[in-house]
Amino acid sequence: MGFLLTLIGLVNVGFVVPDSYSLLKMGAMSTEILIAFFALALMGILVFHQIKGGVLIGIVVAAVITWGVYDSWPSGFIHIPKFEKFPATSLCFSLRLISAVFGFMVVGIFDVSGVIIGVSKLAGLVNAEGTVEGGNVALAATGVSTVVAGFLGSSPVIVAAECFSGVTQGGRTGLTAVISGLWFLLSLFFAPVLSHIPATATSSVLVFVGAKMTELVMEIDWTAIQEALPSFLTICIMPFTFSVADGVLIGSLYYIIIFAFSGTCCRATNKPKILAASGQGLEESLLEVDPELAQARYHQLGDNSISVEAG
Image (cartoon, rainbow, N blue to C red; front, side, top):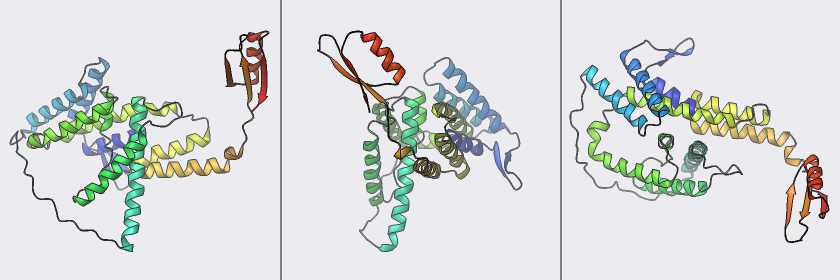
């Protein structure tokens, strides 16, 4: 997903543009591109020196420089939002809506799951079993929120990829999301300024976060084809299709196919189990070990009782 964010950032600032021959090419060098790369370098330097808010400082600096260079300062700073009546809603059911509902469901599941796993990996919140604690609660929350959003005439609710920015600044708990939500609520009153943030500032953040996310590829075993191929397809398809859901879907399908036809799912585990008891008979432990480790453990226990079983 880091490559997707990076590509979005480079496209937004005009560094990557469409091409009729090679699909993509580098755009013409401009002042916006120079400001964006300057902000990116500034963020890297500040984060290297562990300065809190280094990413936010880079955004502000890039925005102020862009406004000054192009004399495009915001027309205002404070705006009182107007809360209008909620749109009229009505319950309806049609068989023609099933395909649309199913499509939204699949895209939502893969999109939200991809972001949750990516954020949790970066934050170190994935347990030893490879699962995200509280991940089901996050999926349920987005599902309920999407249903409520539909009644209010809003778009489906997802886990924003911008969460990575909070994680890179040290956020690790749900309190980070609560604080971010409160800032979003407060931002309604500063819409003239925040809506005027230029692409030079936002693009540099996307590239920076993309670089931070890419460090997760080190956890992939590239020597194991059953893990390398699905991971590679996921990484490539996300930026090529501009879709997190498509990348996760294709990668998951290939993982299932390779896993099913590799015989791994039918292979019985035949690791020896060593049952060791202390000399006083007060403590017993069952350990799965290799034969060499079992032999070493046998010599370590000496005269204590030991039995080896095939598991």
